[in-house]
Amino acid sequence: MMRNTTVFLAMLMLLGWALGAQATDPVKRRLLLQVSEDSVDRMMVALNNAIHVKEHYGPENVDVAIVVFNAGIQTLKYYAPIPLVNRWERARGMGVDILVCEQSLRGAKLKPAEMLPNLSYVPGGVVEIMERTADGWVNVRP
Image 1 (cartoon, rainbow, N blue to C red):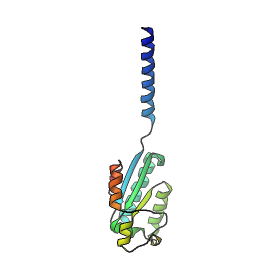
Image 2: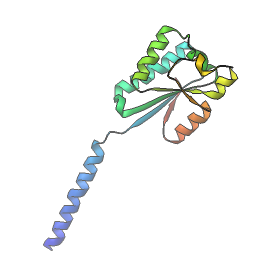
Image 3: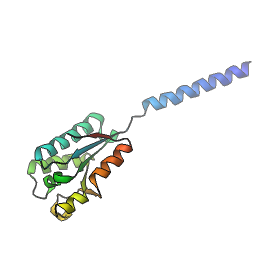
Image 4: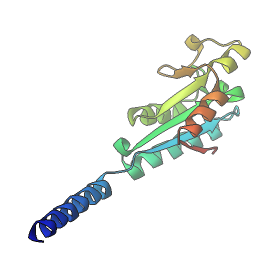
């Protein structure tokens, strides 16, 4: 009887420790923003959203990516307005990724050399959105 009580108490302590450990582990959130319009204002909103989310949760607790496709790629040319470039540099410094659609780039007859530096490229913007959404990313279109 005493042995059963000891085993039972040990199991309760182990369960309590396991539940406590789960409760203290931060949840890694993942936000996917999308920009498909040739609009500096729309891109600035996406960058602002990315920065605010990183600040709210802490840069290490949230992954943020902005998928840019269709006419949205026009906002990321090397001669983009200085405020947009500055905002992009700030977001990039916080770990935000901008993912540019290669299909849209080809369709617009643009090359990566004509775009802002430090961008990442994906084969298809819509496919990237679909895949990340299926992997649990929250998709927002600002």
